[in-house]
Amino acid sequence: MRRRGFTLIEMIMTIIIGSILVLGIAGFLELGAKGYTDTVARQRIQTQAQFVLEKIAREIRHAVPNSIAVTDNSNGQCVSFYPIKYAGFYGINEQSQTLQFIVGDAPSSYDGLSLIINPSRQSDFTDNSIYFSLSGSDTTLSLTANHVLLSTSIADRAYLYQNSVEYCLNLTTNALTRNNVQVGDSISRGTMSYEAPTLHRGGVVRISLTFAQNGEQSHFEQDVQVLNVP
Image (tube, rainbow, N blue to C red):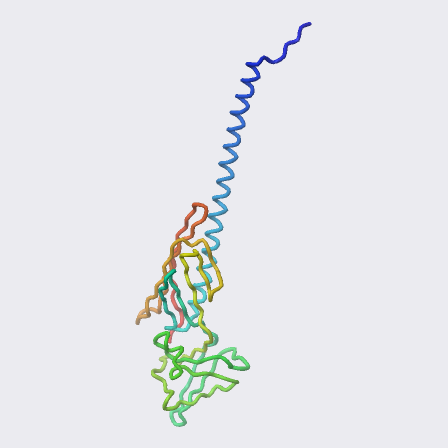
């Protein structure tokens, strides 16, 4: 009995058809892998943006009123402010020319803290004729000729603070830093601005950031209002 194998033409046709099938499957797998990569990149951008904006917003909402300033530099912009360490109320004894304050959850020592009342601009926080340097556990301060209150708080509010916080956007490195520590990356564009408080609302920080990675871009805008009032 005579047996026949594959002819050359049959083998070539088999190889061609197999190659077409393999290329089709490879294209399908490549499309699926690219879709997965794009989804991961998009999710990473959105997760990072939510973390960055929530972190900034939470700190700004608890900043001392009128302690916020936005500055421009060669690489981008910076927003700086003084977070509230403690807040409370004060009273003034006109006869003895002293000021006494109380705060909730008072620490055992006020060393390194400063107290300020009704600041009007960020420079007030570094003017030693306006703020009071605190030490120990003493809650009574003396009012002198060189250290008098420029204005009082309608609600008798006093704020205790320590060091400033600065968020800087560097468009050269596409990074966002907090006190020189990176908290965000992949930022292709961004702006920050500050609107001073009015009689009807507190100060507002406007943040606009665009995150980009692997061809994916997501734009975010957020207005953060300082909740505390003088």
